[in-house]
Figure 1 (cartoon, helix red, strand yellow):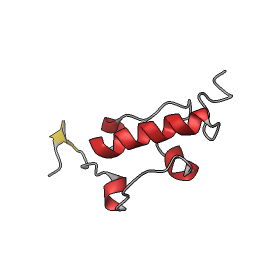
Figure 2 (tube, helix red, strand yellow; figure 1 turned 90 degrees about the horizontal axis):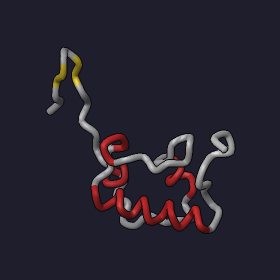
Figure 3 (cartoon, helix red, strand yellow; figure 1 turned 60 degrees about the vertical axis):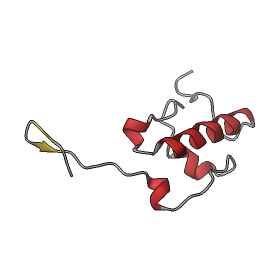
Figure 4 (cartoon, rainbow, N blue to C red; figure 1 turned 45 degrees about the vertical axis):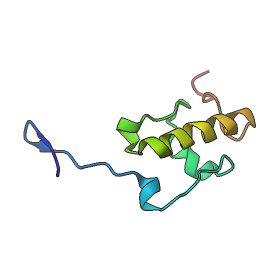
Length: 80
């Protein structure tokens, strides 16, 4: 059910990874991981992205591994 706040209807967020039936998230999949990083290089929180707790934990681990191997940036060049 959609909650309503001051006349605006909010759409319920579903875990995109559960809908795609992703078992494990691979750190080498830059395209998928890039969706969960904002323009400054920060990891998007669960309340914003709508991912479940299990996939959010897998995402953070995979993003941190990809950063160490220089597949993803720690920060953006624009921000530095």
